[in-house]
Length: 163
Image (cartoon, rainbow, N blue to C red; front, top):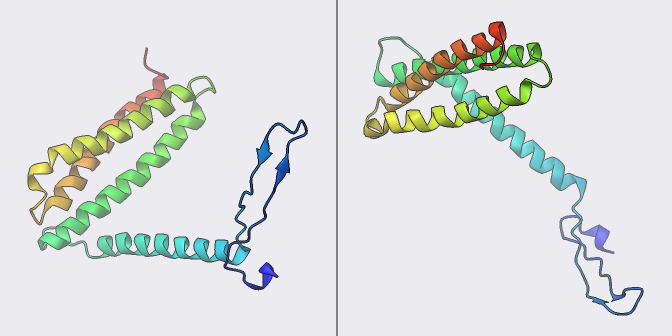
């Protein structure tokens, strides 16, 4: 009967007492959603991610060094995307090169650095948030942070963890 209405939650009550008769169980609802809802949600999520990637790729396509503010902002975003991608590859290479007992230390350090870089760059560019070139300043700061972190990761790769 409830199966004919796929988008409505189905209730499956459970009532009774436990084995000793000391506790009374009250009706509980259990939601069961059809697979179509889950697949529709997944499709919407993937579409949103695709649009976000398209918007970022479009920003890189609009890049003209020395052009308008919007064009130089696009160049800064493009530079950040490339630096971030290269950084993630380097981080993966370092993680694979480390022994199993060294990896948790780098993973912890990387997470702390990642949070710090965003906080640092937001603070460093806070005074320029209302300016049209703020995206360029912010992403430029992130690229500087990534470049400095790459030096540390290369040290991990060639010399092992710091003492």
